[in-house]
Length: 102
Length: 213
Image (cartoon, rainbow over all chains, first blue to last red; front, side):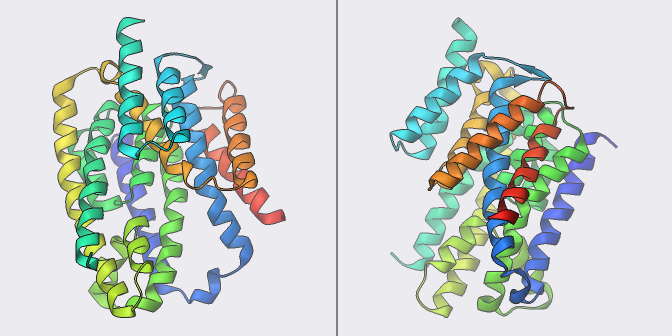
């Protein structure tokens, strides 16, 4: 089996297991402030980690290329409170233009 | 507007992003069938994007599964919140669990009465599920036709989506500091650790910081 299929099946299993467990355990188990805090922080660090790795690295090297230009535009658009779809589109267009013509 | 109207609006808007997922999956060397399987079975946008992101940048299946599953934990916490409102068991609990995501929980908790909360949850969850899956297929087929993802900016659309997703979570100095630390940690680990590991390592940061305070 390819790594892609293994990852599809593994991820689907765990994601569903967490959802179902949530519906099944007593609420008091997860009300601890420590659990709540960690749950707030985990999406922040993982999403930031993903942005960083996908924008500024190529395998095990740090690089600045067309993707950095696109993500800089996305960052600026978010600062300016531009609606989400336009944030993504402006980043993609910038990145594509730099890739093709720079 | 009625709760049904709100639910459909959210379903179509969020579902349309499924096309971005379908296209990104193809750009990350997943097949059309694998992209559709992820939207049907995993059905959690951030986890799906994380998985294709990790494997697309050379990470192993294991680090992909770990990263996306960690992102899926929050759905479990939504489940705890929704269980007391929905009061479901058997196959309804299976179906309800699968559509327990950011949007269905968000719309439900925004309603005033328990009856409206139930309606908001089921309508939004079902609408997002249907449109997310349709658009995933369309996006994947479209990207297959486009060719080189970099020429269309698809390789940057994925991190831009992640940036947008994390943006509304950065509401205090503490959360900004945590995000910047995660960014620095990922950059420092990239040259020395296998692909996928720098992202997973940031989860350790969240656990240490959340534990102490």
